[in-house]
Length: 302
Image (cartoon, rainbow, N blue to C red):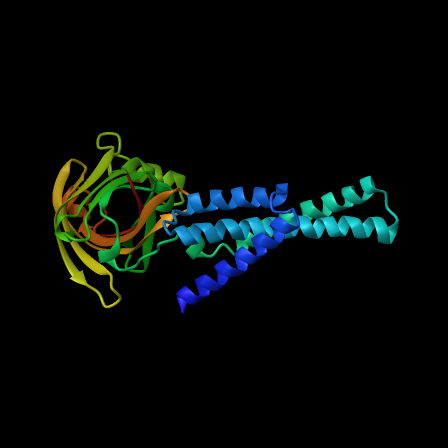
């Protein structure tokens, strides 16, 4: 069925090209501009399918041709129907064209479906691409959660994080995750309290500016949706103290990112540790000893 649809589209396109060549309109400026716009699009799309690339280019070419044809007819109608001079009619058409262009940009922005922005999307872990990955900090977040007075969960984040990932879907046990956090970038939406937490009574960011995590062992467990959950054991170094910490991680999927031109993995990890193990023991009973971590990230293939 798919092959028949492609053949039908190709036949229709060939007929259209022949018609335009006969009328000497094939090589006019607007369709050529559309053709090059289509080439730019498929180059950004990472499409490896030759027929897909050709059809996308022809689609852009045809759209540009239709737009040129429509505005030419509009300009002719303004001259004949309203008695406008050619220059006045051209001015009206240019204004309408600009308005139409802004509308199209707005429409395309609102209709930018994920399948266009992230072609080749896969959720099954075994189909993701092997490689060395680096964290995209713009689209990543590290949260911490701690119980306050047993009444509410207090949530904060760290704004400066970096991480690397060695990933092979065929050998998940060889996955290596390494992360670095600038503890002075702690953010609780309260600058005065942030300074207290970064001080010597808590994280002591001046003497120990970074926290580090390095995985030491990874075990995989398949999920029902085709993804694979990873039990990541590693070592967390905080305030100069190193202790074992375990994370539960999952790859949410992978795709070519049209905006960055990089293959990108979606990644989530959850874990916890006891703050007293790292010398952060103030206010026991008022503030829980257990600290929960939530890490939501995108990794870009290098």
